Image (tube, rainbow, N blue to C red; front, side):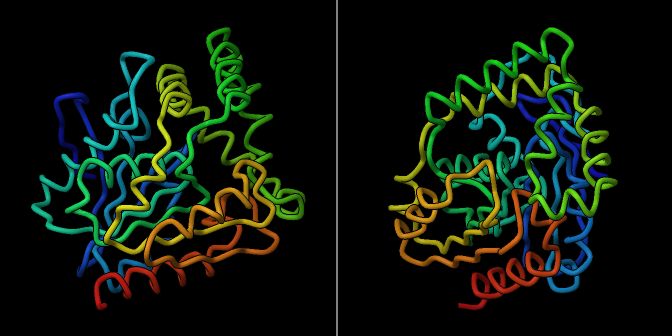
Amino acid sequence: MIKIHSDDFPAIAYTKTGLGPVVVLLHGFPENGGLWHNIVPALSVSYTVIVPDIPGAGNSVPLVSDTTSMEQLAHSIKAIIDNEHLDKVVLAGHSMGGYIALAFADAYPEYVKGLCLIHSTAAADTEEKKENRYKAIALIKKGGKESFLRNAIPNMFADRFKNEHPEIIEEQIKRGMQLADNSMIAYYDAMAKRPGRQEVLKSTAFPVQWIFGKEDNLIDFSNTLAQSRLNNISFVAVYEGCGHMSMLEATDKLKFNIEEFASYCYNS
C-alpha cells in the first residue's frame, strides 16, 4: 500500500501490481479498491495495475468535510499519476469511479490513453435522481446508514445472482458499513452536483469502452448506449443476466474485455 497526499486530501492510498503499461481501476460507491480483487491478478500479468482507494474510502483518510467534488477526486488521481511519473494511462471507472474518470479526462485529456466506463454514464443526474440522493443523505445524517445500504446494495445486482449468492450481498453491505458517514454523504452530494460530460466524449481523441449489465437497475441503458455513439472509437459490451456489479457478477467477461481494450489502446 502506497500513501501520498494532495492539496485537497491528506492521505490518498493506492496499490500497484504487475509490470507493463498502466491500467488504473477506480471503484464506485460505497466501495473501496478491494472491489477489484477478482480483476487485478489477471490484468497484472500484462499490465501495471494501479488501484486507488478514492479519498475518503478504504485506507485513504475519511473525509473531514461532508462535501467534495468529482473534480477534486479527479485531481487526487492526477496526484497518483504524478507520483508514479506516468505519461499515459488507461482509466477504468465503475459507476462513481466512471464519473471521476470522466472528470479526469475533462481536466487532463493528454494523460488518457483510453477510458473504460463500467456501469457508468456521462449524463448528469436527473432531478428525480438528485432528489433521491438528497433523501439518502438525510437518512444517513439521521443514523440510517445501515438501513440505506441494506436497501441499496441488493438493488445493484441481477435478481438471479443475488438469490444465488446472498453471502456476496452481505459482504458488500459490510464493506459499505466501513465507509465513514461523512465520506458517504460527500460522495452522494458530489454525484448529485456533477455536470454532464457528453462534450468530453465528443471531443476525445482516445477510445472509450462501455460495459453494460442488461439487468442494471441504476443506469438508463438506452440513454447511456446512445452516449457510446458520441466518441470516435467505441467498444461496447452488454452482459446478459448482469446488474451493476460485473466485477462480481461476470468476472471473466469483465477481465477479458478490459484486457482486450487495454491491448487496443496500447498497441493501435
